[in-house]
Image (tube, rainbow, N blue to C red; front, side, top):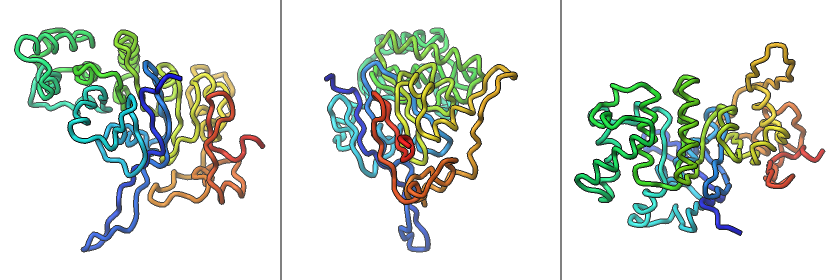
Length: 323
């Protein structure tokens, strides 16, 4: 069996809550809890769910942009969470991120050429003419012109700024990229251009993506497999066709029923979830989804369901799938 490019086991990220003059620790926001998955080389894993479910925190934690509370992350067999400074520095060249907001992620005081070349200079990979050549090469492969290197972020449109963000992520020639809602701030027509660019780059450069989004249509277009998150947990994980055609978890079914269909005459059974998402600082007992689940039973309130395989490579966590 081929070794996965990325292997995540029981990843947890808690943010402590402090109160009072002495800043006593009174609880935790359990943003990510027991998240496990693997990612193969050249694969795209989509991660979907409502806002606040822990998608972005998962991506940032496995890159160590925020430190994990517990768990294990292995990249090409290397223990990322326990890597020392020098080893982590080397891993930074292999693992990059594309941020959601292409404007706030760019320094308005430096040119695009400086922004894209910043990591190259930091890692001492290129100097002089070779540095300029590499910057222009990366910018052009992302659909921008060579003269753009001397312009500032405010001179570009949203779509162009996201191309710059992609170029900056590609500068170090990584093999794995966390794409944190890279098209959510863009117009629909521009979204399609950016998604197609990312798919072309994946084919050309052999990239692997963790693609985080709340737009299930976009995720289906770009992903090979899809994981569904709810309140810090992955509740279903499967090949995209299996998940979209035969969803198992009630939460997945509710999300898929909300996807707009361009046919006003088509009758659909839209599942409306009642109530708000519970607080991650005080999650419900048992199955975290039971407070909003339309088919919840007593066992759902008492016992947390096991995340297990129900069909080939189709995993879910629900007591009622077999019933």
